[in-house]
Amino acid sequence: MARVLVTGAAGFIGSHLVDRLLAGGCEVVGVDAFTRYYPREQKLRNLSSAVESGRFRLVEGDLLELDLPRLLRGVEAVAHLAAEPGVRRSWGVGFEVYLRRNVLATERLLEAVWRAGVPRFVLASSSSVYGPDDGRPVAEDHPLRPASPYGLSKLSAEELVRLYARERGVQGAVLRYFTVYGPRQRPEMALSRFIAAAYAGRPVEIFGDGGQVRDMTYVSDAVAATVAALERGVEGTYNVGGGVRVSVRRMLEVVREVTGHPVEAVYGRVAAGDVRSTWADFRRAERDLGYRPQVGLEEGVAAQAEWAVREALAATA
Ligand code: NAD
Ligand code: UGA
Image (cartoon, protein in one colour):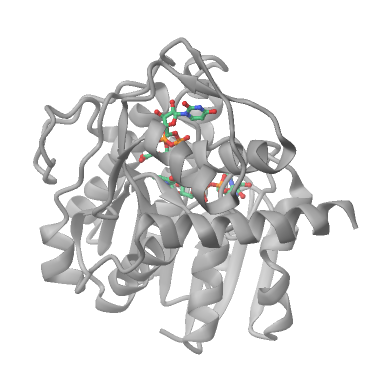
């Protein structure tokens, strides 16, 4: 792949994907609207090594407004990561922002991809399209019953990819990431908050009893699956889990061990939209993408904690 377009390029996962593609010799066009979900400065820092590469071009703008035919000229593959995230928040802020950023923007991009004849398209989707599991690993054919407006919007984006594959012949893959963590993680996600609280000597709030379990995926593993999907030009839907299932209480315990700080937990109410468990059966990704998660939780949390220290210094510099 000579030239790849990455949407959501300044975000957590998108910026890591950009770095990996550049390291592999690609030319990358990154699109990002710098939405206000979290600070622009953090997103700009995410791209600091990419901008030095000489093979990265950042286009700041909204997918709903940009001149997409122009942007797609000469592009061989599109990785669509731009979205409004936030499972729990999506119950509180109104559906319009999720509809616009996750559904309408995806449709506009797919239409342009089809018209431009771009041969490969990969969508970042989410475990939240499944809703509750029954305490067993879920494969891709598990019933889809999202528990949040965010999950519903990601499912709609997936359906658009399947529609354009069936009716327009756009070769599209859907990757369902399961709770991704590591350096640059979004600030409102559990590990980010727990690590920040540890260094600041603040208590954390656990939503519910902390017995809810997440299949945790280290960011370089999610990125490896994405690059494989782009390179192999696969079609279809793939779970991308980390193979590490932990309760929120255990996440906090690992943060205490890694940072050496005793963090106090305050227990609050169960959050709307939060499922009790996620658990990926990712055998299809193993088979078709050669996917095999490499990073365990202690190692991954240590890397995230080291980054958080550097990031806090950079933010105050
Ligand atoms: P992020 O918020 O860090 O990155 C998303 C980026 O998209 C942001 O920088 C934002 O400015 C940009 N963006 C949003 N709407 C846009 C638009 N209309 N035009 C241009 N840019 C726009 O989020 P992330 O955690 O890196 O997530 C990346 C993708 O992975 C998302 O699609 C998300 O739904 C999906 N996902 C994330 C996780 C996770 O655990 N982080 C898990 C499952 C799925
Ligand atoms: C994450 C991402 O935020 C979503 O974008 C993504 O779509 C989703 O993964 C996915 O797998 O599809 P989530 O699993 O909720 O969502 O990840 P975290 O925000 O890290 O939360 C993990 C758990 O910790 C949740 O049960 C949450 O309620 C809990 N939590 C979070 C707390 O108890 N306290 C907090 O301060 C933050």
